[in-house]
Length: 200
Image 1 (tube, helix red, strand yellow):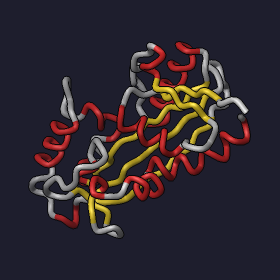
Image 2: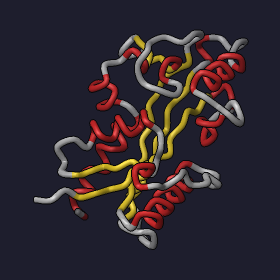
Image 3: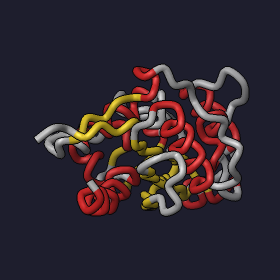
Image 4: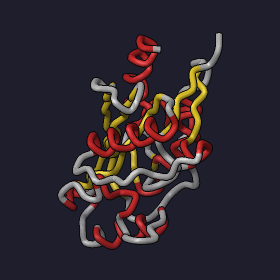
């Protein structure tokens, strides 16, 4: 049985690793869009859903393959949901994970532990082609809080600052297999897989 090629509408190496692990043994060849010469789409949407659809459509148009797009980010209650859809570029032009994490810590410097609640949101969109009128959309979230200093070396983005009460560690200290099963992306993928299997 030949593999189905699906483009991952992201050039984020961390996300690619997670998707490859999540889709292992599913007879799906997940290709990062950069491998096919596709640059990032302009994220002009005002919600995770809009941006995920924009990214998936862009990848479909550029490659002719079906595409999966992920739009995800961190919502911090003390910051009225920021950085939200701007999570990857929170610290402005030239944003890096380190700069974003530093800015978040600065903004929360005066906020007490009990008020540092936050959650990761993930929206996954699967489009069969660029004109797909009924994309599959799956959403999930992951509750935690923001610690006062980075802990852990694994993961990417805000993982070193995202404390998980049940696991008593940050996301960056979690075993990768455990993270992939309980994270916002892992939970959204668990919803997407049965829907994908139905259409492939």
